[in-house]
Length: 552
Image (cartoon, rainbow, N blue to C red; front, side):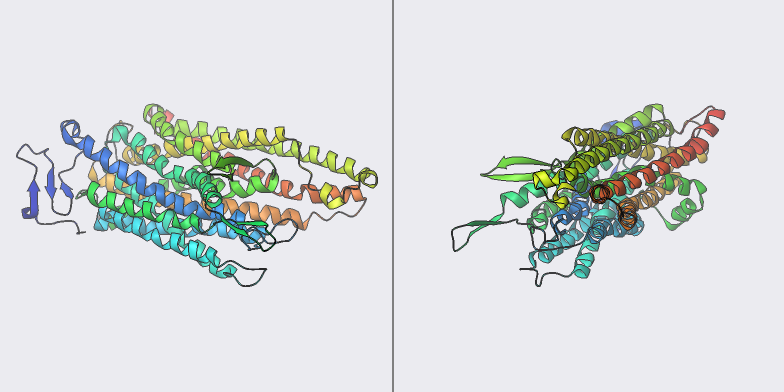
């Protein structure tokens, strides 16, 4: 790898031509890159940009996989409702599990700030190689930590060590910022929303693929032992959750080495960074992005646990594979639809304006959250009625009170709740795509460009925009920490207030619904936040621009 060349004598020219000809330099650097020049773009720029986009998506995809591994693994490490250890011997509490889920997002969000600089410092291709290599650390550490599992409640990796290993997963979260900062230089303003949306979606879908693939791998590669009395004992192969991705990471490094390029024009210098930080709109856009992407990544991390806690019997799918039954959580469907729809958000924003599409996204998020709350409330009442009826007749049925308290609502409520959450994920995906079109448009408009939807404001504004994209993505990623911790707090609050003194039926009702009530309270807080985000968006990026006869 090499730093940006400064001596034009080092170049290997692709051929003679006019000023819009690309110049190929050593170390896979390209000079004279100008995607706004339609002749250059059609002749050779488009192909190069799409190739770099493809390899960037693959590397970022693996980053998201690594970032979200703990959201799947943690479900297997929790203590069971009866107080016994989980299937792999660990017995972490609900609160401890939420910390293991959210810590990678906290670290990943923070890493996005320095990652933004690295594209300008050493080149987009070069940093993709390094950032992909760093993913080998958390995958290896996760597998080794889980392999040291407790036996009969003794030994095993400690919780504090697990926290440190989970923090290493943040390496996967940092990739997004550098990838987006890099790709924004490759595409013209008129297609930037589509390109950034596709790049982000390809990465985001890693969360869904991980949540779908890992449970299958754990089941298919499970260790089967026959005890002395001839009984089969199946031990889930949880360490495969890390080992499986290592060869794919090595492939990403190879793809970046031989398929990607560095651009000499891709410079996000400290001046551009300072200019972005001084712009008040950077902070408003960062806040709004917490609402869209923060919701996406936070809910993606919390959704497997949320479904397992509220609809235990219905939240998984049994799939016969290779002579065994793989149990796959349906939570993967949320990040899947949110990721797949993201490019559409960018495409619609290219056509109608990012602010308008984001308004629709926030409105849809409010509606979906409200519907999810109502379904949970209805399921809670159904569970209450069943529990009270069974408690009244327990002396005839012989069913213990604690078993009655865990009776679930009919499956109809689960499917309605899943549908509401899929709608919420779709809305966050649309908002993610439209926001990433909106950001460069806002900065281009503030630089004096009349048609900021389609025209660039020049390389200096592009560099400022690149810095802004990295900063905004970093703040948005903190939602991956905030949302799980919000649910953690509302569950704790509800547990503290759940003790009921009165009839047996009342006590049963309290035990059977306190978890549902905790998640319901968390969703109310999210809904309130979405309303605030929508008001800010309309006040700053819709109404003022209507008065100017334009849109962003």
